Image (cartoon, rainbow, N blue to C red; front, side, top):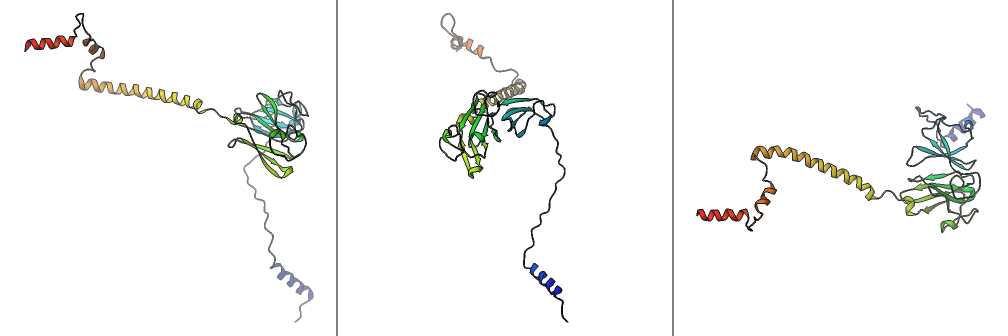
Length: 270
């Protein structure tokens, strides 16, 4: 019995299929129970804002919002809602200028980091610089002299960066880690100790010592009240006052003490 050519071809394809691995399954695993809600619409604000990045502001319940299009930073009260208060924190248009936060200028930054003291570190990519926004104002802490793309290390003011870099603050090492994607590098910029200093142990210890002192005082008073009835019930009286003992030992006008008089009286009786 002869098989038709089509049947032989199909059998050959089936045999070949067994020699090749099957492609891995790419099923989509959906996890339910989450919701997405719009809490701020930049187009509906009195002054349109283009949110690009948002981070919590340290030591407050506010949020810091970066508008990369307008090169401005804003403070948004939390929780975010259409009625949230929004105020400009830093930035005054596109450019390169340090000084007062509301007068400083950035060039479309798209990344920033916040430390535990609330200081901002800005990856000002189009200015190829790292900027710092603190209570003292805005300063340039890296890339201040280059003003052009590069990959130079060394003193921060002489360093250079690509057109595409981000940064993150790492408090454990008191440094900024820089993801310099344009140069395919991970770089580290060490900060000054005062940028990362926390409350001293002395400042933290004073309240603790005060609390311990108050607790010890309370325990002492309670112990005294608890022991006093016990002493009275077993001895019938409290200890002899120290003031009386001291008075007995004091000399009289003749220079003799009450103890000397007692000894003289005992000798006469003998």
